[in-house]
Length: 186
Image (cartoon, rainbow, N blue to C red; front, top):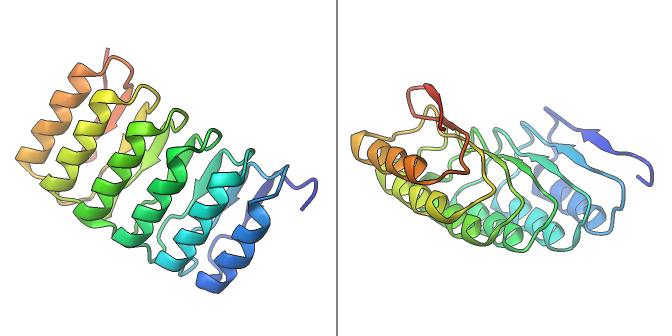
């Protein structure tokens, strides 16, 4: 992988063990900028391995973990990996099951991250509590410009928290709510 810039392993059966092998190589890789691991049965253990790689990798800009088996513990690991990461701008965690607790962990990671611009958390069983945590992070984060939360379990209360946060954050550009409505803030 010395010259490879994009690796697409979409719809395989990588699992946690395969994720560990990939993450081991990713930590020291100097060329890979996009990694697509959609539909690969990667769980919390694999997410932890990628989080460790994110702490040392200085080139990866896009990580796609759509529709794996990542829960709140995996989200916690990824949030820790993102805390000091200075290259990842796009993280796709859609179609996992991180729930409110995982959303809280990611929100905490967003408080310190200064590079992530796009975060997809659609279809993750996030409710009002998780939405409130994400809203709190949006109030202080100045780099995230797109957040996808469609097809979650966010109700009126969580929606109001998000709308309030977006209105108060002049940096935030696109907001996709639980109904799939997209609004661009001014």
